[in-house]
Amino acid sequence: MRPLLVALINDGRLSAKERERYFRALDFNTGQETTRLLASHLAEWTRAAFATDSSAERRAGGTAIALEALGRLKGIDLAAYPEVKASLDRWLEHTRGTPQFVELVGGFGLKDQDAALLEIAAKDPAGSLGVEAVRMVLNNQDTDLLKRSLTGADASHIAEALGRAGKKEIVPLLEPVVTDTVRDVALRREAVRALARVQEGAAALLKLAQESRLPADLTFTASAALNDVRWESLKAQAAQVLPVPQAQTGKPLPPISELVSKKGDPIKGAAVFRRDVLACIKCHQVNGEGVDFGPNLSDIGTKLGKDALYQAILDPSAGISFGFEAWRIDLKDGNEAYGLIVSDTADELALKSVGGIVTRYKKSDITTRTQQKLSVMPAGLEQAISQEDLIALVEYLSTLKNPSPQPSATKAGP
Image 1 (cartoon, rainbow, N blue to C red):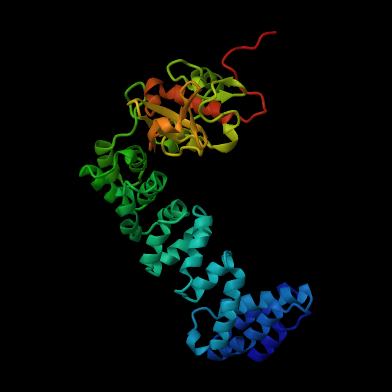
Image 2 (cartoon, rainbow, N blue to C red; image 1 turned 30 degrees about the vertical axis):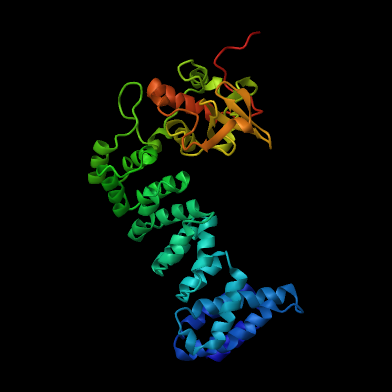
């Protein structure tokens, strides 16, 4: 019966649906004989899939059959079936970076594909595929590789994926990242958010805060994350140690996850944006209005969702846009300057200060220049306005999608 089913599966005239039916029939005939039969034909099907001298239809058929067969060979001892190992290696190379790759690695319990799995996690840290990939690496206990990945170019993405994996094993990996103030602050903030996703990680963050070992530049991120966890005991302790930011009323703001669900008045938000107490218009431009200093916000609504807009207002240093990093320039005469570098030549450095004023300094007059960890946009702006105004402001910013008409704080004339 089994050889007949395999012969039918191998019939190139079959449709994919018919072939699948015969594979399902084969599932009722499990055992060593079926395994040996599939293993003996796998190399043939693999060759058909990669044959350059055959039709695309035949190659597609070979691919479908080979992957179905591999799916039914999961868990076998590859050392006992070297022909399966040879075909599997070819398919791993061919499917690298895809869901089939993750499925094959997991199905055969492979321990030597962790680097490729981390590549997937880095590309899709918030997706199911990336999270499953990093979870498999955690299960393989490849601690050294994970530590190295947290020092590379994709470190922030790896940290995010680790947090979404929901495993307590991330704590010893990410806690040292949080406390290492030499490392990139964006990575450290991502590590905080990742730790807060698991109970053991949230407890570790809380302990750092209680022992005054939580770096100051992570206070806001930790406060926002810990006051939004689902573990009531930890949440209650966090409210005492790391109280959430307060609005003008002195009352704590709701978590960002709650603020985004609230609807504001964009017309009122446009007025808040131009209000002197915030002075947003004195640092940003919207459709030609305002000062050219900070990022142009004419199309900010197409770039950031409401959650990211709240984050940018409540913790402006969390995600500083490229080219808008603050610098301090120390001069030989004992003075210093602060602002954004807009030009840097062999002889001269131009610095734009708040208000959009550009000042040029000779390199020979500069002793040191230091990039600042904090944004030029001050924190605590939410304390100058009501919660209602904050919600309205974010609503307004979310409508900025140049060149569409935007809500205005003033009524247009006739």
